[in-house]
Image (cartoon, rainbow, N blue to C red; front, side, top):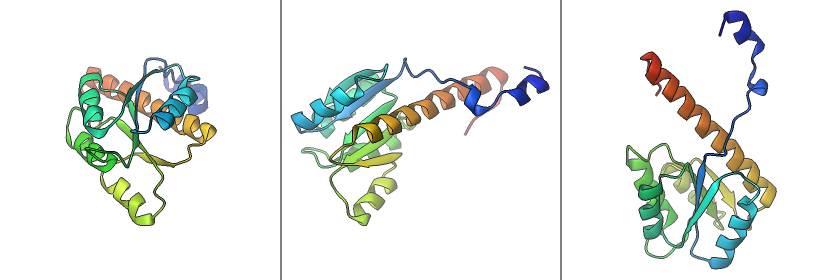
Amino acid sequence: MTASEYELTTADDVEVDISGCSILVVDDNAQNLELVEAYLESLPCKVTAATDGAMAIERIRALQPDLVLLDVMMPKMSGFEVCRLVKGEPTLRSTVIIMVTALHEVADLERAVECGCDDFISKPVNKVELITRVRGLLKVRVLKRTLAEYMRTRGGSVS
């Protein structure tokens, strides 16, 4: 791409394809899980589910999803613990995690940020908010992956 072509290309001109992305939905409540999965049907992504924190860790390690929608209050392992483990593993660190929580205390939101989550959504989940945030964070994930691959082929690095 020449300098003049680069100047004509803006962020608005770039269409980001999220159709190859995968999402893991984690919630111990079957109704919440079903609702979120139904909301995500409009996205061109593969959606899988887990019903507790331990299962979430297994699926994240096996499937390496692009994005995880993670309930906070779950048996066996809380969403905070899952997030901390995922963000602590070098091969999984770039996984986008959105905490889905009924907790509204500032301390709980601070704890979510401290354990490494990328965003959070309050329950009850609003469909438009969920789709907008998921789509936006998946686009960022795809762009980061594309940039990292470009830098790898050019001999540079991306932090």
